[in-house]
Length: 123
Length: 106
Image (cartoon, one colour):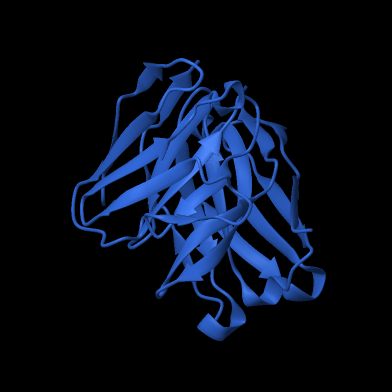
């Protein structure tokens, strides 16, 4: 069974840092693109970042709202995805989801999601 | 950025109804369109990809159509467990973007 389990969320002050983790199981993690998607309280879904697989050179994409502050990384030996969040702002408050991306005609769509971890940025 | 606009933002329906949700992209996205279902307090669930392909395990009462800029999600024979918010999503170009959601109330 495919499973994605996020951890690392919590309360942090503005300007602070937090590192999220996503533990994957039930599939060959190294084959897949992996993403972070967030959802502010009562709001819609917002894509945050993507880590491509080894075959695609582990290249990365970021949303403009987090570029320069957040860093996505992965450790294929540990089947894990990470999100290092620095210089956090109150508007980063959200549930952060780890999502697996599957290929479709050269692009990649989300086919599996974790349960999410809540990040609250407040003084 | 490609803007995704869903309509309506909410709707009320009865058990057994057929419901249609529309999604419009601000520019052509071919069929790089997915639909997700999200229930309160839960993670999104993938329903459809490639505009009309059903994700494994998703019941056939869900169907999708469209290409280019205009897409629809149809739910046939609405059941109480279908009460949820539905999101469309384009995955052809960065930044990846989502529609604002359609809340289906039974």
